[in-house]
Length: 110
Image (cartoon, rainbow, N blue to C red):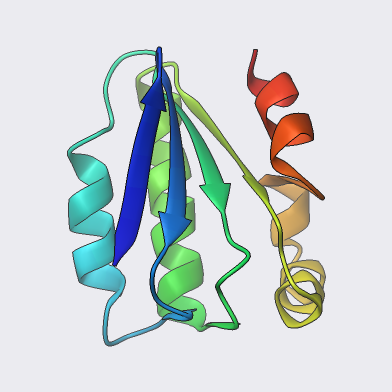
């Protein structure tokens, strides 16, 4: 479902699937919970995602909330047009910082 790479306390997460929806959001959240620890920083590379439903959006918000509880943070990059429109429509881009590329996302967390 995902690939995770580490650099210090920064995790870069990329997707092997093209959607996060009611069929796989629980697995996604469960996998991500393993990495939530004090000061963790997540960078989500969402280039592969073509579709996210309300369950998927809720999963991302839940992960963000859990990270904030342990002084962590998360950002995203690489959203395609459909995902950018969705994030703007539901105002998620006001809550989760998104960037055009990985380098800008990394700088935002350092």
